[in-house]
Image (cartoon, rainbow, N blue to C red; front, side):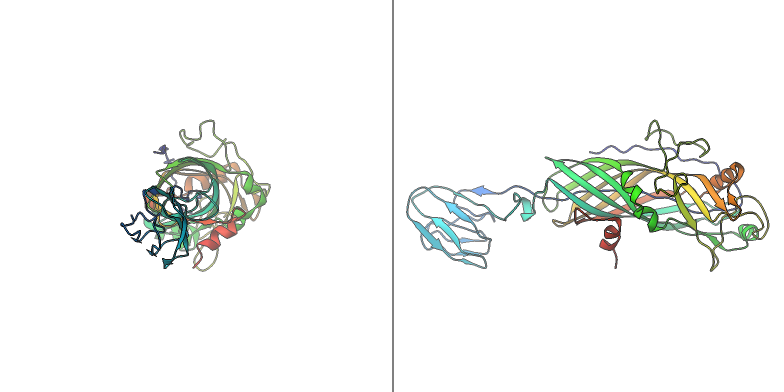
Length: 380
């Protein structure tokens, strides 16, 4: 069982506007191993009768046996001369007949076979898509609401028996818009706010250097086997204890320019037009307060997941986000960089999302896959 660590969420709020931000990452695992051996039987588990006939297996001992179904298999029995039998629905099987003896079945090619015929790999790469059920409370600027948050991650895994480990990085986060209340519309001059995290942030070359280490385990490697996994992701900041209490304010937090644009944390772009307004950095009427066209964020997510393999290349299940934390550590207005008071105002205005549940789906991709490949893996 993988460890899930709860984290506290900041509670300071201000009263005039709300806008969105977050990101998360993730990862997972699929593979299969193992073969079956039985006396005078095939990998499908059938046992030959006295005349050497089987159904559902892949090989049988005896002379002139006919086998229904199955994959190419070679069986070796003690004694007797070799005889070739033909399999209905499968490829020819060679049996060495004799009196008594046992047969050893081998199926598949390449990697060691596993339960359900899935290849047992030592390392592999997956695209993972999370759907989070989020809610937020109303305040004087915004209405309460519920919506889905979508997160995608790229995961590279190594299996040591049933123990899993490897790095994971974020590849997309899509946040919901916040609908403004009547008071919020008076302040901003618009109806909604959305701070977008563009895909270009995840595609930045420097982001590949900022990964989280995940660990977990599996019950086996075949279809219907289970996977459990957990990790803590820090993006744009460092903490002495990554799983400790989240700071109440972004002021004074250590920052890292993870997207390489010369600004702290990672850069988000607020949406403007079609009812969307830029988030204010102070109080004012009808948008008279200075607004930010860029917002610099830091983020932490503590994630665990539990799922079941549905095929050799996919698995899915539920996820828990025990921490979904963020802070504003900087911003930019048309007049240049924000002042310390403007940054603090923006930080207090950020929405505090509550994640009630989450689901995930993972699909195996090329070991050279990029974040774009991850997004394409789940495109309609």
